[in-house]
Each structure stands twice: as structure tokens, then as C-alpha cells.
Length: 620
Image (cartoon, rainbow, N blue to C red):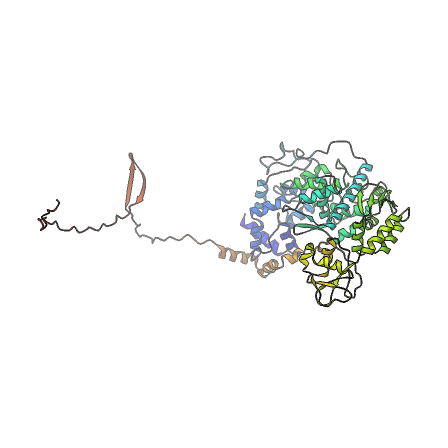
């Protein structure tokens, strides 16, 4: 990195606005806690080879081509030059920094744009390989472009049928998530148990369809992660009550808006203008980010989602209803609606407690009907079955015998069959034998007019976590008290299949919604707010004389000369050495270790041995 480049970039950074600097730091993925003290520190780090290598992977094909051209001459004024200047990859005059040129020459082209696309020069030769050995001198060409999917083009009628199937399957996935949140593993994908549950319920055909539809729902904001689970969002619940065409349009718009700027057909790749909402040909997608090794997998995932939702057909072409959107216009909803199966708002109620819809039942009616009946088959003619348990669930959720009869009589083409009317009355008469509500003192009271039923609840092992204890002062019948909340106690008793209703402090019935929804997504903060502290630090270090500030910084950060511990003219310290010879040459020289001083032991004087009195003589 040339010092002059860092000095020039520091001056240009100081001249930028806070919004421009924050956008630059965000694009270059600068940490908000970076310990930069002034613009010179920022310039040096932005010209660091590792930082430039990361920035080059984010270049689109046309931006990469413009940057390669800047190695020889300045980039002409235009959107490409503005994009490169905004990310501090070139100077304000369009010339590349020396560090940028070195990083670009060291970068490897991992996917090349198709010939004739915006990122490939018309007069540049294509490389012999998809990833040339000398990527800095090779120009990406057409050799790495993915071929179109083989096969005959899909008809609009077949694509419309695929769109209808995708919408119905996604609705079933959200219904399953409302009943029981979907679990996901550490990698963020759907768990095997829930994948199997969706397949067995008929919501999806296979595991791939389950994974793709869950990913689509997350991208559209219909599902959101909450720890290790996926929950339906409030927009997802609203989506379930909308019509089929509205469901499709909502998700399709989210998928198209999520396309990155390199896939946009406009000049600057921004999605704000009408001319820039379209997308380039699918054959050019693999080379849209030639230096990003992870781009291929991302492009494949986006293509899979768009094909699953019938935004594109099997060959990657846009069907009749998305063709205007591909060119930058709006989706032709009428063209798709004309090919979708018509929705019906009536069903046939049978004496065997089943309901048959002679077509695609309107989504809001389907949602209400499925709250009181179990759907047995899903097709253009769906069937539903009423059971004592399904009717009890509807009554638990707040329905009454009157509301059930009124809804079914209005929905039915054949009136209300007598067996179904009898089952409704029988379930309603049994329902409500237990009442759960607050007692006004911070506890939850469980009351009933049936003393035997209350005793059964008190000894039920499944309800032991509630800690139900008899109330000492029961009014209007016996009662049990628990410290758990009224909602918790209500749903535990309901799951144990007791006929229970929720009431308020006055004893009036109230409806409970068991659906656990994901919390509202918090909007991402603006870059200016994210980098507020860093911007304030850089602004406080600015001075009127940039040259003097640079010289002062060089003086402060200059490296000290190495110290010499030996005094000039002092003799070198000598060490006695010892040579270890092996053969006729010395292997190594090591300082001789001082030989330890041995203490001389004092010997006892030699004694003459004389015969002792015992007659024994001493041993010599």
C-alpha cells in the first residue's frame, strides 16, 4: 500500500458526509467497534489486502469489469464508477489504488459471466477455463455459463397448476406450524421429525418440497425463527386468510424483491426505479458475481425457489404473468387468475359427518371449516370429516352450538344433516362442564357443578404440574385452585380432553387463541445509527490542515531504531568454548560449562591394628 494512496483516501473520506461514510462502512462490512482514531486509520484499513479481498468478492460482473479497466485507465463517469467510489475501491477521479490493483490481480475468478452479458466485455477474449490460473490477467468469458435446463418449454397452464399447488402446500405448512411450531436443527434447516410430519399429513410431497417451501416462507416473512423453532408471523396469519391469487402475489413479490443488484436488468442495479425491477437472463446468473465462491449455491437456491413458486418455468423462462415483471414492469395477476381453478364458497354436507367441497374452497372458508373438522384429502375437491374431538376443539376455541349451526347452514348446499346437528348439540351439552378463570386474588380457579368430575380432575396424573388444591371457600359448587395462569391451566385441561371453557372474573365466557405467533420483526437500524460512535470519533480528529496532521501522525507512529546493548568500543564478551569432535571436524561449539568444585573429603588417619583384649585381631 502506497502511503500517498492512504493519504489521498483519508482526505476524500474526510470530505464525505456521515451518510456516505456509514454506507461505505456497511458495504465493506466494517465493525462498528473498530478502534480507528482518525481518517488516516480508516484509509489504511480500507486499503488493507484482506479488506480489499472481501470487497472484491462483492463485486458484480459489470463492476468487476469496470475495475479491471481501471487498472489501465480511469473509469469513465457513470453508475459503475459511482459504485466503486462509494466503496472506496477507486479514487474520486476513477483511478484504482495500488492496493486495489494488487488485490484484484491476486483474486481468482470462480464463475465467469456469460458472453454478451453486462459483465463481459464484447471485445475481450474468453478464458480457456472457467477459473484460469492467472485470474488477474484473464477476463471472464462464456465458458462457465450454466446451460439452460434441457427439455421442452413448460406451458402456462402447467405453470399455473404448479403455482396453485405451491400455494396450497405452503398454506398447509403454515397450518401445521400454527398447531405445533416447526423445529429446526443447528444448521437452521427443518428438523427430520417435522419434515416427516409434513409429508405424512399430505402438506408436501417429499423432503425437498418441505425444505424449499419453509425457505420461501421465511424469505417472504410468513415464518420467523424463534430460537430453535419456526413460528408463524402476524403477516403469515393474515396471509392464510387471503385469497389464492393474493397469496401467490405476496410471496412472488417478496422473492423478486430479494434478488440481488447484480441480477437486475437496470443500469445501476437498484430496485427503486421501474426500469431496474426486472432481472437479467437466467443463463447469466452463475457469473453475476465472478469472484464470490459462495455465489453458485445462492444462485441455485434462488432459481429453485422461483421455479417452485412458478415465477419461472422449468427452463428458467418467465411465464405469461411474470414476463412483464422480468422486463421491469408489474406482474400480470389477471393472466394467472384466468388459469387458476375457480374458488367455491359452498360445500356438500353428508349424513356420514363429512363435507365435500366441489372445487377449491375459498381460503377464509377453508380456515373456518378446518377449525371444526379434519381435512381428509386435499385436491381441487377436498373432503372434511366432523368428529366429537374436532367439534370439541371448535367449542374450546370459542365457538358455540349456535355459531356452528349458523356457519354450516350458510356454507352447505344440502342443508344441515340431522346426524351432524345431533352431534353438535351433544358436544355442546357436554362442553363447559369445567370452567377455568382468575379468582381476583392472583390464582386460577377451576369450578364445576359436577363434583365427581372435579374430583377426577384433582387426581389426574396428567394435571399434576398444575398443583391443583381444593378451595376452602367454594361458591356455586366445588372449586380447585392453582398458581398457574388461567391460559396455562385451560390448555392443559383441554389437552387432557376435558370439556372445559375459559371464563373471566365475572364468569362470562371468553375465547382464547392458542396460536403462538412470532414476535414482530424489528426494523434494521440505519447505518448512520450503527456507526454513530465511530463517525463521531473520526469527526473529532479532523483538523483544518490535513498535510500537517499526516506528518504528525507519521512522526507519532514511526518505528524506533533498534537498540544496541553493547557500548561502542567495548570488547565483546568472551566465552570459553569447547569443541566436540566427531571424526575430523567440529560438530558444534557450545560455551563450556564451569566445572563444579568438588569438596575433598578428609580421610581418617590410618590406624594401626593391635590385638585387642578379646584376643581377636583386626582385619587388614
